[in-house]
Image (cartoon, rainbow, N blue to C red; front, side):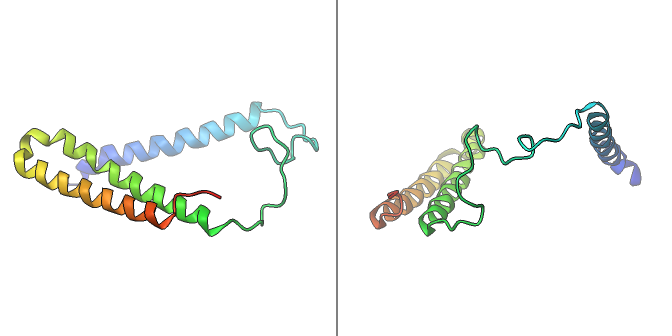
Length: 118
């Protein structure tokens, strides 16, 4: 019975060994000269403005949560699309209901003004 888990154990060992070898090799051949410019914060080529402790508007978090919610719901469309022929009319009705519920949620969020960025 333990033989069935041997490939998984082998994969874990190879993954850990690859990570350790990569880190060791890069630390051995990488440059080690530290400077003020190299140690400064970097954000897309722009100078950082403000501190990392600034507060964000609650609108930012609301839009982020809505994005995650609708994105995860959209992921459910892929398995349905693959099994569409097997599911038949029942699957079509169920997915139609799912999309209607998703659309009602989208309209609700839109009417509440949650998608308006100020």
